[in-house]
Picture 1 (spheres, rainbow, N blue to C red):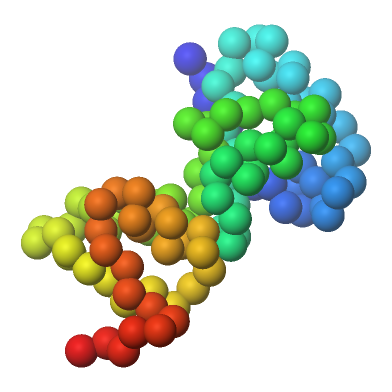
Picture 2 (spheres, rainbow, N blue to C red):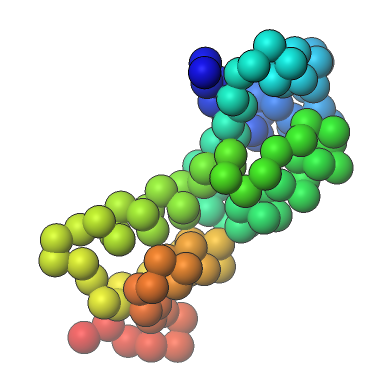
Length: 114
């Protein structure tokens, strides 16, 4: 099955405005049997937040087809050898939550490294 990956912000939409032809392109690809994935380097929101945004814009999507930098980072850490049991995170809640979701403890904000 062919696969397409779209960056979201600035490609599919800008702010709350869907870019010209974005909606039609996504739905035509799906109708032709393509898997459509959505990617972003923004780690501030959860994948679920992005799914809700895509739905509001009539672009469709589900959490399994949304890839964020936070999700990619968490899965990278999960595969490290040795796997870290805890990490100190300076970043948004989206990043902290994705790391916790793979079973790694998160320190930050009110904790001191070391």
